[in-house]
Length: 426
Ligand SMILES: *Cc1c(COP(=O)(O)O)cnc(C)c1O
Image (cartoon, rainbow, N blue to C red; front, side, top):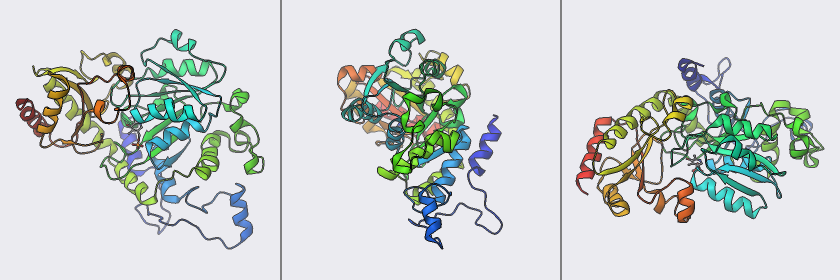
């Protein structure tokens, strides 16, 4: 797919107004939908007819935006969630239950690590964390009888490790389970994981997809490529009758839509993490410029990374586009056109110098966020990842002097000028 195609999808996919309908996707801020007969309403409940009846299960604004992301990722079906956390939880819980096991890359977002290592453990789901650079041979050894999924981040937040998607997909598929990847950082503009063998793609749309830091959200996209029926015994929730829906067998009734339909009819029905249509509207607007913003984030970040690399107050810089970077080779394969606007680096003098540097920035704000239009910085070890002990931090690739900078879409020279000033203050 060329960049031009992606740009057209960003602007137009997901919503096709009919004659006389609004050109811009309307915000259908209604919890409910009217029908003339109770029989038709009954058919909707029984999944015999498709249609809207209650926004927790589906809403036209939410669906249109979900479909735009489905188009961008090259999937067959998708759903929006109220947050990225909900998206990853749903993606896993849709196929895992108590007694099951998941293998995850250790280089993942702190919230997702807590979800898998602690909250899901309390629900009876075991996990094994592996180095994202693990060999296929070693990865194969981590599978158990009860392993039901493999999880990773395509470009990890905040450690910026590139997942070797082909290796993870091969191991997963050889063991009859899907690969689920969180593609929040590169976005489909720079990486389309389905093309490399991932089966399910998740997003925290809070970040680049929304782009302007005005609403929290998430998405789960199904490639439709994983054959659940072929591994029937592993995924009874999809391949055996669901008694809570009159014995429907999702794989038989919905084919490639089975995974997302089940997520809607069971997880959304029972847990209800839906976005408001208003927030989905903001997400849809953000997506219309994703193809313009991502290259700008990347170019600015590269300029900042090159500046930092040559500064003697900086101990190290991590950005996969730098030739010396440990991730450069993998990035050339998976992220040939760019990666994201997030870089991480260490300041000489450790934690204290890092704090002094951050507090001296003027244009860049210290905020718990990444990946929006405004440049910002964060110290993960004392904020997003503060629940982790030293060993867990090391495994996640986060040192105590690591500063994460999310380079925005302002003018690069102003961002660099700001950094120069703050470095002088140390
Ligand atoms: C932020 C983030 C999440 C969590 O998303 P929320 O929208 O904050 O719930 C998950 N994965 C990655 C890679 C993230 O950056």
